[in-house]
Image (tube, rainbow, N blue to C red):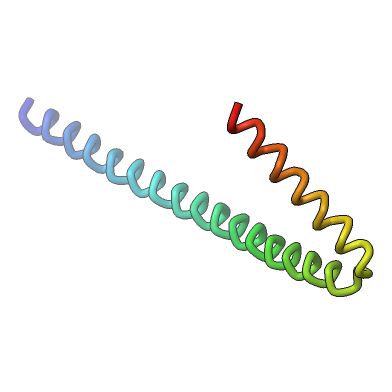
Length: 84
């Protein structure tokens, strides 16, 4: 009876070890996928900033003035809302 119980406990310990290893492997794969997605998003953010700077470089002075006034107006509107 002792040997049967010892064998069952050993089988349980082995199955727990295998399950733990499988979970760790799955977590490692998921972590790798998340890191890859994070790097892709980071690359897109850098590209977006580069394109924004490029768009400002090629904009005419009139377009820049219009954008500036829009930004000032939006800031003024936000400050008026905040005061009320």
